[in-house]
Every structure is written in structure tokens, then in C-alpha cells.
Figure 1 (cartoon, rainbow, N blue to C red):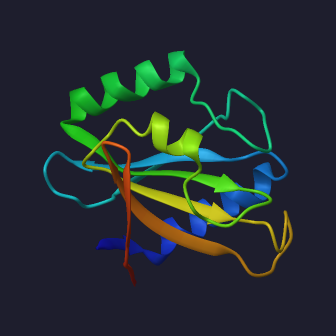
Figure 2: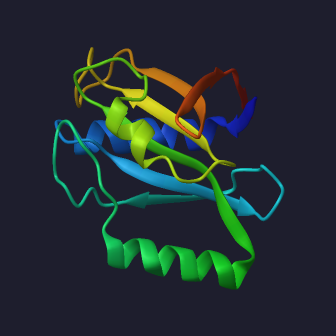
Length: 139
């Protein structure tokens, strides 16, 4: 189960709306071994695509160095889907390289960049195996 703050969910949704029609992406990091998402880090989708996301390699290197310095790890890796449901695509599954992370997808297919319904779902992706998990949103 993913326990996550309402503020972090709202931040992911806001990022997804702001980047629509392109996919948004980012990370929420936390203390190593804690499984607590604490620090929200929106990233730039280097692919600038409505159907694919890619972290900029230089940004990703800086992020991992910063996490090492702070003894943090990625707890949530999120991205948006702009025209499909919030479920990992084959590409998403093939690029999932953090077995301890929660992969959160935000679908803006119904509302686009505007206020309206969004779908937020969390998954574990380990060795190509996708398992949906419940999300507990806390204050």
C-alpha cells in the first residue's frame, strides 16, 4: 500500500495538468528504507511527448547524486497519461528499474489541463510484473 499526503497527490495532479498535452513526470523521494514519500521533485519530460516520458539524463544524474548526499531514495516515480487510463504501458513496464518504488500514474484523459476528474493509481513493477496497490491519502 502507498501512504501519501494529499499535498503530494495534488502536486502530481497539478503537474500533469500543467504539462498536458505532454506527459508529466517526476519523483517523490524519502529517507532510505522508509517507504515514506517526503520530497516532491517534478522533472522535465525530455521527450516532450503526449505518449512517452523520459527523464533528462543530466537531471537524473543530479537527482541521484543529491539523493545519495541526503541518504534518500525514490519512493514514488510518477508520470501522466494524457489520452489513456492510469495503467502502465508496455514501455512504462520495460523502463521500470526501481523495484522498491511505487509507480503512480495520473490520467488527465477526461479533463486535459482543466479542472475535472483525474484518475490516480499506484503500482509495483518488479521484473516486468505489474501489481496494482491501494493508495491511502493522508492529511
